[in-house]
Length: 420
Picture 1: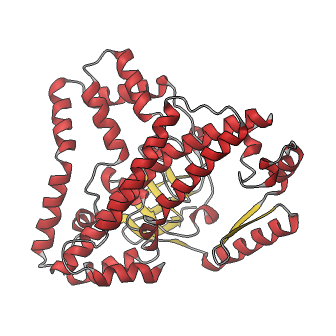
Picture 2: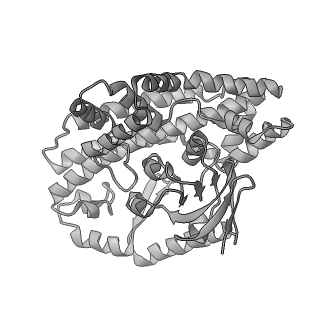
Picture 3: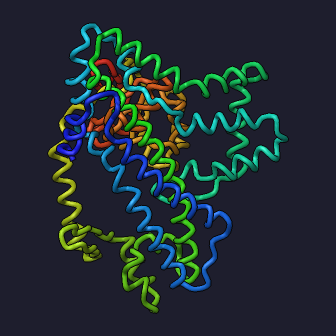
């Protein structure tokens, strides 16, 4: 991964990132994905389990192709902070935190910017029509790896009311629309002003644009993934109907397994898997998938992962600064949307990583700490946009901190300190 990221850095010779052609190829696969999603939204119907499995395998192949190309984004996570500091920041004597934020900022609108823009443009519609339009376009926006669902109209009514409250009159709404529409041009201009101020060379400017490009691409990839989670949930629910078992049990199997392909009911096997677990591994050398629900294999996997993670964990919580600032607050560990109810305004949000579906609590957070992520990750993008102090890539925040801890988050130094 790191070698591939370094290769991209070396090949940058001007303001182009060198990844534009890869992105263009990826966008073609996104069009195929969107076409598949549209088929499902219009009412994907399968007469038999075999019909469904054919489409599921087709969708799996499509998703695999869609992940191969943008995997380059993740290659930069381990070294992104080091690269941008070494190649750019270290050559800018007196560069402020605010200027760093400008250089690292995303250039395209985030998912939630696009949602807000859609709402603002639709406020002239009747309430019922706007509710339906938002649900049709954005029903997937809180989907995650745990599953997908169509959000109810009530969710969007709350979003609409929030936008109305923030921009109560027509003039303010138009100003906000113009600001969102002009964001890309404004950010590009601000970046150029900072780069000119410090006399950055064209290769250095190329690196700045590379990280903005990766940030925007990652955000777009997340949107595609969230839509795909809803499609997968359709497959799960319908397959559960065909096999007459609970949808949650279906998630404990792979569609290529004989227990799914065969005619016997696998309910007992899947129930046991939910208790003991199941290990999936891809053998890329022999191009095969290894699946085991043997308790010994599952325990070996857990022990191996625990040992590897322990090697990376220190006793202190430190990471990379995504958005500077110093705040105090009470820690709340957020693993999924089920944890939202325990979160209060001004809490410190601690998570393995943030994702778009966590936005309802992110907006209320005084600070953000994540285990994972680099300069292009979701937490970094959103914290810069909202001005929330944020530390990313700690490796151990969710392990060393717990709900109720009173901490000082110093996002100037990248350190988290417990306050007794």
